[in-house]
Length: 295
Image (cartoon, rainbow, N blue to C red; front, side, top):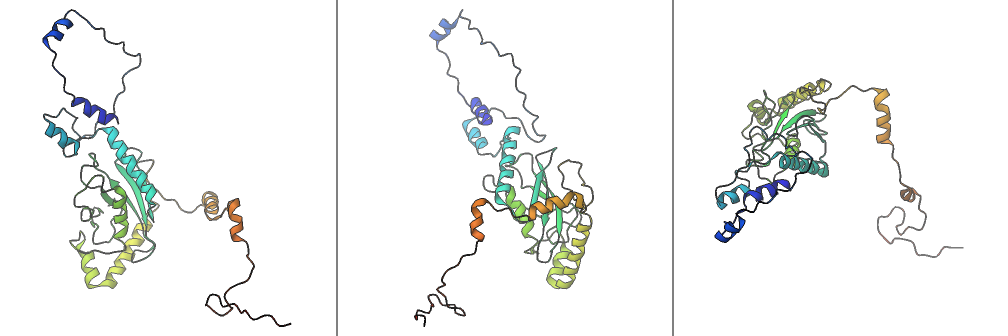
């Protein structure tokens, strides 16, 4: 990678020239190689909170930077890390979760969670993931719901999910964004009331489950009633919903529900005839009647 090469370049130790080399080098002018007519590549601007990469004062500092403790990764490494994370999200095939990186910033992802059963059944919750600009060495990504969901772990004002209880310390190469997304889905199936961000929801879940369910139903209805609202963030990749339009959606629905068999799969649905080794009305194998048929 270009970043590794540039870092390694700063660690090169130049051997001092001897007197003989110094004398032989006097009066000898070496012509610099001609530069190509093409212009230099310009790197994108470094994130605001990232410090430029500087030459470490010692080998210990170099090793410390290599471990990521004080390293400030350049934009290319950051872009590579986020691309790798999004690829992992796709490979995991998270059930009921859809995410889309922002067009304006790779550090912001738009998402939606579909809850199919449980207390929050039929809930459709849109959210935004905010990734630190020093990822993957910073804090864990933040998850903020567009509309605060009535839940013990969701702030009733800001809509932010308490992610840090699951990721107290973000460890690169160990923690991944897809795990944060799965955690955001899991909280709707396994309710945790310890150290809640919404004390009212926690108390009701512990003391009055029926009232808690009633408020959850109201919260689900409120979120679903705003599905067709315009996204709060002006971004062409922000997730938006539109009412059913047969002229637009019928064709897409037909494609999804039409099962197209491959030619090699045709034989799988064919009727198979032959003798059975189980007597009708019996579940025992090899219960075929071996008595010869009477003429």
